[in-house]
Image (cartoon, rainbow, N blue to C red):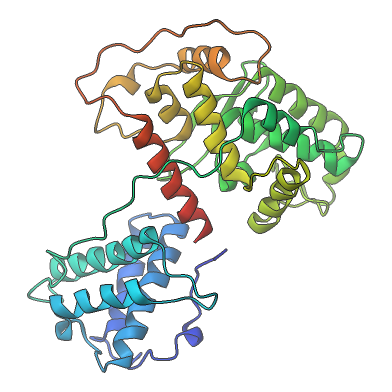
Length: 360
């Protein structure tokens, strides 16, 4: 679903909307609390969709207030999600069931903390166990180059697309992060990229390869001035109409190039995120550096990132990313940390979960 911002009319069993103590009104209060606490709009939209889905199910069963919800009822709802089938006949993914259960559990925690209920029925609610999965498809170095070469760089949009493909391949940034890039976020002299308000509403500075920088510079000089019609708000990659590219449009554009390459693999923006991580790992990069590139860093779990400079991160990127003509055979590791070493399985499980979240 491209945008989960919920239309109440699409939920046919929402009742007692005006009841100030009813489920719907308290969900709206909770969403307003999230806005005040500066949660991202994407997170708020997701929570609203998940909770209204639950309210619609509860309304069918005559459950109108949170005091009427018990733990057995919530477990019954989890069973409903497990057996639910979408219009195409597919079940809800485990990650989707997990996200909807988390939304309910956090909402009821908020209700209990605000004394809207005396007892939290979701306090001991067990969440579905997430699967440990490796990526379904990852491009080899030659396959990635083949996809990149599909862009017709003699055309305006083809040159733009090559610059976007190179950026995705070099940095592994997410679809929305690419869309939100501003011209000033790329430091072509230092070879760095500033990702503003990425996942978790955190900024991060990451390296971008020399080749990707050259394509971006060519795009900025030869193509972007032609696309920047009307008011220019500084977005780096523009549509043919001079605006930021839509999420679904970007997905379609990248997927078309993957299909044209005829490599028997499917995917779009996230395919390059997986590919970057895998190829750097295979070339000797420490997993923790890759996590820093991807924005998976949790400062509460390790102190190492407080000492990792962009200079060091760029060195590792230059040495291990294949879109660079020369690199050494080995890469020096990080200084010792007290936390358990992350594994490749941890990395790819997080990437798979991200992909489901983006496509849900």
